[in-house]
Image (cartoon, rainbow, N blue to C red):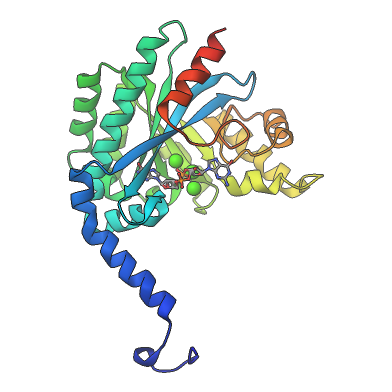
Amino acid sequence: AKSAGGNRFERADPEADARAITRHGLTTALPAALDRGEFFIEYQPLVHLGDGSVHGAEALVRWCHPQHGVLGPDRFIPLAEHTGLIVPLGRWVLQEAVRQARFWQRRHSDGGPLRINVNLSPTQLHHPNLVADTVDVLERSGLEPAALCLEVTESALIGADEDLLKPLRQLAEMGVDIALDDFGTGYSNLANLRRLPVSILKLDRSFTQGMQQHPADPVDLKIVEGIVSLAHSLELAVTVEGVETGAQAEQLRELGCDTAQGWYYARPGAPDRIHALLLADAV
Ligand code: C2E
Ligand code: CA
Ligand code: CA
Ligand code: CA
């Protein structure tokens, strides 16, 4: 039994110990996993709320672990962040996702400019090679910078100084979109938004969840309405995450959100899935 308030060295919590052992094992296995190609990317479509057409896709990394099976990013991204492996892993994700986006564009040249969203973690943001690596990946793939969107969490930019913002500013000047991910969870100063080289707000899933109830919570509706109008007055586009029902999609469309992502449209999946959606859209 657990001894509440007891000496922490005498604690008996086999589950916590097992978790710690697994965490340690996963951490030490990360570098070899990258060498062996155990990571893969799933893509989740982003759609225009107006007509449901495909706007782009977000790249979401997974680890196919030889013993534990497929692990989601929440299991290993924090570990990779901690050890710094996130830098080569993130570079691999960027390169792979950009290559994939270019491939889709070639196959659907009449399908308009398909966009690819890639997540950046705080360590990548601080890395001196961020701009050079990104430029290099884009040039080698032939993807135009305007087709790339880098997603940075709101919390990673809270209190950010000019030194941290400079690389993002450079990327934005090249035409790369910067999205503020998980927006609304970080208690950031809204006035601060003007200072950031950001062109897209990704409204956190918690807001969409508040719209699940029938009728939706009127306070949630007011908050989303306020955020959308503020965003639009700053010329930022609004993407909503975690849309799971048609009713939510309709509600968010009425509130003026621009694009959406969620299980209602598609779960993250293999690249073929995006290809099929693009084909369907073209008809
Ligand atoms: P995120 O960037 O907020 O990504 C959205 C997450 O919501 C994804 O979880 C996605 O599968 C999930 N999701 C999408 N639609 C729905 C929905 O309708 N309902 C619900 N309940 N969930 C939905 P996932 O794939 O487990 O990724 C978790 C987080 O891991 C991501 O959150 C992102 O912060 C991070 N991540 C994923 N790939 C990368 C990467 O390549 N680099 C970095 N640095 N972080 C990554
Ligand atoms: Ca994201
Ligand atoms: Ca998010
Ligand atoms: Ca999230």
